[in-house]
Image (cartoon, rainbow, N blue to C red; front, side, top):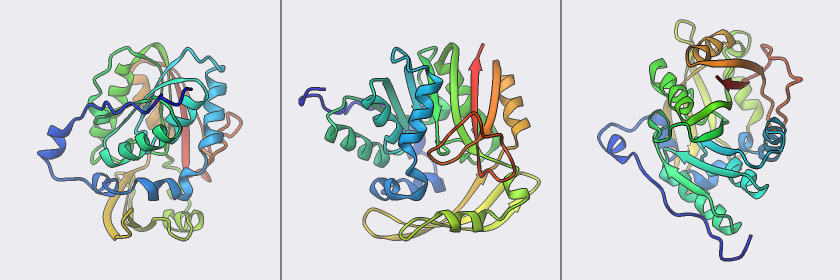
Length: 275
């Protein structure tokens, strides 16, 4: 692309909702965390994950793709660099600022917009939606809010559109310690997670998240995340009209249809096709 092609600074916002309510833990986490986020261990599989997405799309660059919870734009930017057309949405203006800076440095023009994933302004606009590394879902406070994200993304897809996302595997904490897993996959300078309780009635892991923001300030947040079992995901997507739903184990940077989901997988990879 030419040197004069810069990142699109246009971004719409759902600021009214954010300004009129108390900030949730995930909103506080991403306030000033763009650069540090890119150095986290769980963000290092971008290239391999984009390889998988390309295979799922049969390398058809005519597809219009929505990246939900795009964060600092790592998948959006990589796929744009490979010739695909993407729109990236995120709740965090700080994350989007980082994404726009990275796109500009790569001389890519990308449409990044600020939106709440539960209230997307799109309808039948995209051929594909991706939502990776817990891009909003399943971080919401209630199951209804999480379902709202699935519903909103579905509305954004065209008929026969494809939805590819990852989410936390509810089978994992039944057999393993979430805290020990996070300790084993982290590194110096990465965020740490101290689980306080995994609630078997709600499948929510309540934890203390400790991290350092881009200014070097250390912060601790009371967080909770919803884990889902495969049958729940299948039922939720069927209720939204998906005709084909497939679930696999999600391995960092190496998504594959050959990886059957097991209790050893911290995340699951979901591939669904809309009717």
